[in-house]
Image: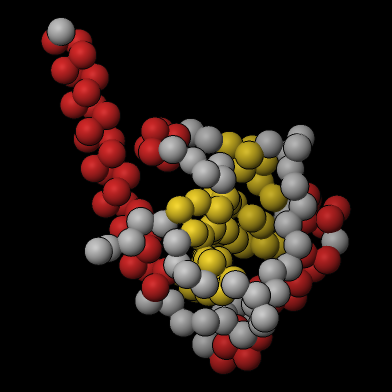
Length: 159
């Protein structure tokens, strides 16, 4: 019985942690401005990031060469245990090539956040704000790389 109570306490603590983390992430997403090519240039995004970003989506071989595998991340439709463990890795085998997301006339919105001249975070969400995904790009030497990818997951919203 005491093992069951310990297990139950662990599950509850993990769930609370996961909920708090997703709420903070959702808050960050909601406070980010929308992105356009002009925004990338005007708001001080790294000068070479936009050209990398376009090439990344246009050329599948280039994309595979600019991903650090095994890639840290979160699978689509992840459960709280998978997120809390933080040990999921995307593999090169089975990778689905990412294509550009058209914002105009679709239900998606995209936001970028410059962390530094060497790191940019991209958040993509469904217009209703219930689902989203995140990619993190980092510069190493002269090249940019995808270093983290969280697939499309339900976002926790504050009520």
